[in-house]
Length: 271
Image: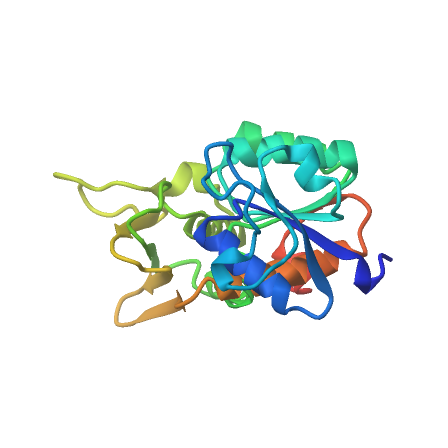
């Protein structure tokens, strides 16, 4: 198992909101250290100290060269875009760098590519790194099994105005967990749009509603609506720091893994 002092981490998207939160968490951690920072070639942060935004010096410069940014590290944490993440993972595979992936919006083909890369390196990939969200997923699994008949299932999510994918990766993961628990295929039963004369609700469907506005970090509610009662399971994020702390827990988990594709249920022992 990798020594705790060897948790050397590169952060992708280092000058973004999530990148800053990750760098702060690493800087404050007793067992992790920042050894690399990546950003786009067009980023004005290139050449600057990766922690300059916090008024502290990390001694690590933001770079766009993937080999330069990844070579000093044993781990990558990546919350960027699907195409960028895949490019990063290919270099991780080449260098033997393990990866924590919080990026969302992957196509099925891209997910298959990640699974192939995980044959050579250890990867934790989850649409939400929050410990609370993953405990919520476990609760939803239990609720869905008990409420599989007689209850209509709706997933409502809200995020900030800058989010580019919808529904959120977390909402989709909630749908997948619920569908699997009740023996359905989300690809066949999900309803993402309602407009006009829709007819009565099909009880076998799982509905999604998306809200975008302001600076909402991330709210998710799953509604199990029956006759005479409804059950709501809600998780609300007020800070991205929960994602950062969950990511560091994922790094610590990966320290004991050689290869394979894992998620936060593995990290948190929720299987």
